[in-house]
Length: 97
Image 1 (tube, rainbow, N blue to C red):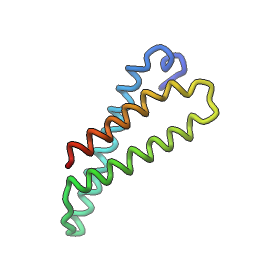
Image 2 (cartoon, helix red, strand yellow):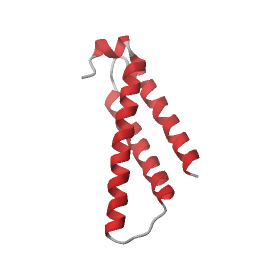
Image 3 (cartoon, rainbow, N blue to C red):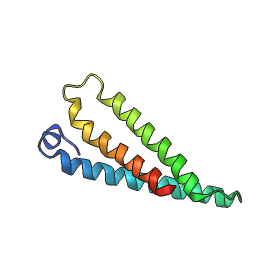
């Protein structure tokens, strides 16, 4: 559990665990959507699907995070999470092209 004490003392470790969890959830979503396309016999480029899903996933993640930290005392703690998410999105799109 991410408590306030842990967030204040080790933001780098928490950011790493956050991005690993976000990446795992993204991979599970990607594999599930790809499986659905295979079942309905739709042939879609996996790089295009990964790019579209990555953009939607990261933007929704950032939007939800911004809504959750609104009116909090220390919103700067979550800046690491957001920066790592933006870097992930950028690298993901660059590698998919």
